[in-house]
Image (cartoon, rainbow, N blue to C red; front, side, top):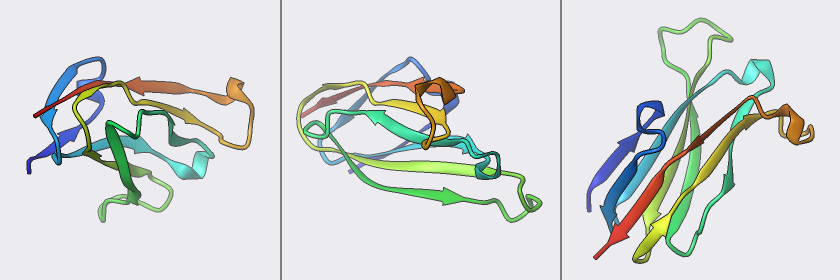
Length: 108
């Protein structure tokens, strides 16, 4: 099993992994603004979302933001393109401030 860490620099790329590999997507977030990253779409039969966590760096001041980390695991062979959006979840689609997507090919 391999750990693959992804972030903003990987946006739009094709990432190749194997079944059972762990994929972590790291996105900057400042919850005090009301905006948070959410997983908008994903084929969970190919790429399974395991958990989501938020980390605040120790050196950051209060309200300074941190990272939302989405933990996935490759489940079945295939190609999937998880879509994320930075939004205020309680508002309509018009609240989306940013989007992020990658293409993940799971083989073997």
